[in-house]
Amino acid sequence: MGYNIDDIYSSITTAEHIPGKSQWRRTEGRDSSAYGPVQLTGGDRFGSKMWDAYHDEYQSKRIGLDEKERQYVSRFLEQADRFLDPVSDEDFSTYGYGGPGVLTSDEDKALYERVAKKIMKFELKYRYKDDVGEFIKGWRGPTDKYIEGGKDPGNKTYFDKFWNKYNTLTEKRKNKSDIDSLMPDEAIMDSVIKE
Image 1 (tube, one colour):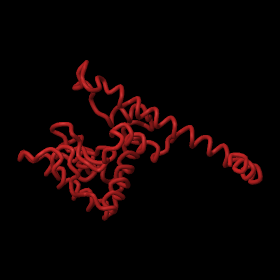
Image 2: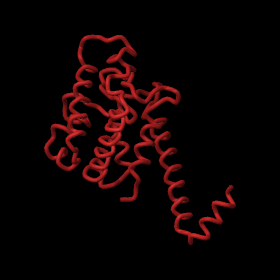
Image 3: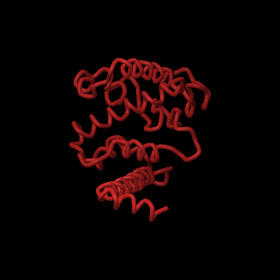
Image 4: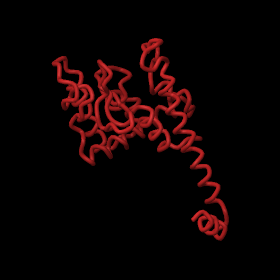
């Protein structure tokens, strides 16, 4: 495993969101239940990350959700149903496109991140054999719906944002590891020099 799951989570969050807008909201993309920092989906169909984590026995077992996480996923799926309800909510209302949903407490946010990282680890290990490049393509999903001349044809901006953030974090982690591997006196001296 040559990746850090925190770096992947952070990089997807960067790719998914516009700076200055809340990450704790539903997508503005139509016909989607995508929600939160890494835009997890919860619709009632195969391929929906949270639905699969909860209902697919193979995935559920390997992802290893504890009881509190399973309860959270159940509430996430209820929220997704409301997002996808054919009754039209106004954009930016609780369940409308761009809306905040109802899973906004600090505990909900912490559970979202824990569950998301477990799903990512599962996907990386079992679907993509620890290949981050293939993983991020799969996470984003098919890009053929993005037309030339559209907002982000081929998702170039999305992938650029992901890789820029991921490579920056990986480099920082490598440099920190290099510093941490120094002898204690050298590490102290290095921190003094930087101040």
